Every structure is written in C-alpha cells, then in structure tokens.
Length: 174
Image (cartoon, rainbow, N blue to C red; front, top):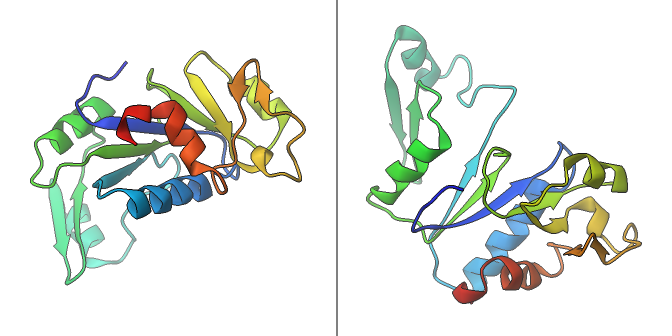
C-alpha cells in the first residue's frame, strides 16, 4: 500500500470502460462541494505524452532531461524519465501546490482501495481483487445494471451518484 498524507482515489479498468467519464464526474462533484485541490495522475501505456514536432518534443529529442512549458493558462513538466508512482507522489507532497486528493487512472500496481470501471460482468471477473471497493463505469448505467453489487462490492454509477462513491472511499472528507 502506498503511504501518503494525500488522499488517493484509484480508478482501474480496460480501455472504453468508462474510467475517464467517471473521473470527470467525481471531479465535477468534488469541486462543487469542496475547495479541495484535486490532481489527476494518468498512466499512459501506449503512446507518448508530448506531440511529435512540437517545440517541447524537439527539446526532449535533442537530449533535455526535462522540459517545462508555461503558457498564460498552464504549466507542463515533461521529465524524460519514467518515474515510479511512489516518487511522483513524494514529489507532489513537496510541490508548491499541494493536492488534497490525487485521482489516479490506470495504476493497477497500487495496493490501495480502487474503483473498478467495467462494461461487462466478464470484465469484473477478469479484474476483480481484494483492493476493489466500488464497481462503476459503463456497467453501472441503469440500462446495463442487473445487479446492485458483486461479491458484496457495490456497483455505483459515478455519473449519477458520485457522492455515494465518496461516502465509501473517503467518508472523512465529506
């Protein structure tokens, strides 16, 4: 289990299962009812983050260890090294803007509580383990939901009931 003073909410699931929509819904909910600083860490498996041909990409290709891009609206750090999640969290704990909550997407190696997003019963069975505390995603929509739980784990539609997910994962935060 990753130990941190920052609250973690972890989403896993196959591509197309509803993870991103569920995360967006949770962020919308939290920003309406709290003033929490929310960060999202996404594990990208198959493509690079930076766009080929852009200046930041060219600087990295030339050998820069890190590239920092700043605009009027955002600052982006490109570190040309695949940092492990523990080091990223440690860095965020010491950053000038400290998050209250970090939402992760796609970090299966975490042993912390997780939300499993799926689109079918078979996908639950394939990915289920003892870290799953909520099942959500496409399977939780009313048109697809036939059960309210799986092996005692609630199936909750994050798009319609994000507060129910928070009650389970972080009741002390509400």
